[in-house]
Image (cartoon, rainbow over all chains, first blue to last red; front, side, top):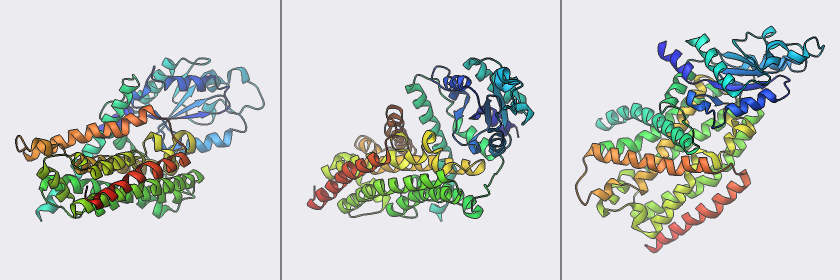
Length: 139
Length: 315
């Protein structure tokens, strides 16, 4: 089991899901994947299909249109999985609090492991969030 | 009996080597982009992790085909890689000739294609059609190359061709103009066969979400990835031992021991793999399927036909 836990920490594959964010956090996630921050040294790859993923990076407050899709994508990620909420919108709903179009924040819908604050958070913070989530779940 | 035992010990060897080579490929790719890159044993971590994940079979998939296909793909490509390696270790032909090796290596992309189309995902179907097109594009020149080699040396046995190089004390690619053309066409076919970046339209991540692999997850994905890295290794090893068998050059000075020849061949394979897969995948962007098809039917096919023509003329 020890080898399995170590492998899970060493190879987190990321899937990025925008649930109605302004794309600020999404651009910072893309910046995290550039050679400057180089998350591949931690074994991270951005995958295109939720079925390949281990870590679900959620940005944005969950809009009403996005709610069933969000639940579906969450369920398509095979266990064991980690959810990281990136940005203030995904933590509290920030400027959208009280809006009738918002069903979120994400932790009302699925269990969230780590919150990365910032509007948008810096790439270092996102890397730290992923590492913390993996340590919390498998370490 | 002896050959069977050698073949059996080659299986784990091929498994380890193909994952290790993939790790080195990823490291070199990262260093070329001025990154630190993943550790060399990263593919092992990925493999173990994928095997410890949940198995999900989509509702739309025909589950029996969907689940058996990755096993066949992995088994076929590991066997295809084992036959050349075992032949070199045993020093004789082990269980089949070039035709069988090429068929075993073709099984794995076909199986992945079938798995993708059985998943019921439209992206899987797009991946299927693109992979089929590419298969037609590169398979024809590749088989003609092998045909040219066999016309030249009147043999389809793998080990005979390796021995020929030892006998003439030179690489096959440098021996005759016809063989040089065949080697060039074979090398050009390699990135398409292994689906590395200039020719990875069938598994384009940013375009059609991994194509055939879209619905695979957990252990099935692990097996498909293993099949892919094993066939990458097999193909590089095959190309090196057929056309660039470097121990043959040293034969003149001293007779390399079995282990030494094997090691030299593996090092050459690694260098060859870096230049035919890692470098193109770092410096080129993805082509369109029509461009790739046109390229394959213009350059490698012409080269391979020239090669056959020259071999018939006896050059």
